[in-house]
Amino acid sequence: MSRLTKFFAAIIAWVFPMTANAEDTYFTATGQEDGKPLIFRSLKAVPAGVHEADLPNRVIILWRYQSDLNGMPGADANSAQTALEDALMPMDVNESGRQILVVTGNNRKEWHWYVKDFDTWIAQLNQRLATSPVYPIEISHTYEPLWTSYKDFLVEVNGL
Image 1 (spheres, rainbow, N blue to C red):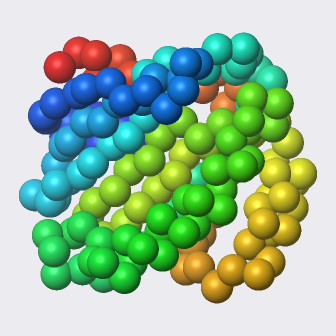
Image 2 (cartoon, rainbow, N blue to C red):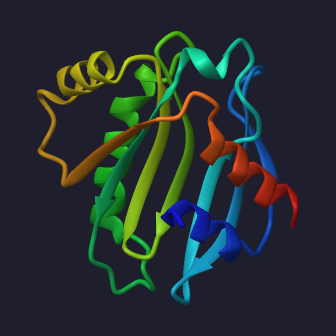
């Protein structure tokens, strides 16, 4: 069972829409893992104009941190994570990759993306971060042309 699948069973609380633009609708949900809170921010649906098979590579950027705040990031970690996310946002375009889910809690933050070509995407990421501080991140990727993990997450949230 994947770590994300374990999250599904832990989702507890609320969902509400947040619209970033006319095309994308986001929602947040909360849950628990190991007795610690989790916050999920996700696209409500596959973005308009995106065909899943065109972005078949699932990428997870993982940032582990230490916290005395019940597993949530402290102010310094949160500020640095926001700076990383700001650097990533210009890469969030239908043609090359979409960020679909962010998970925060239990001493980690994860950004989940689906991208067209992993090697091209990672090269763009490295270029964007070339003048940034070194972030303590790990990046993994798998081939997932049907976006199964994301769709399973949506089913779990919608089942609340």
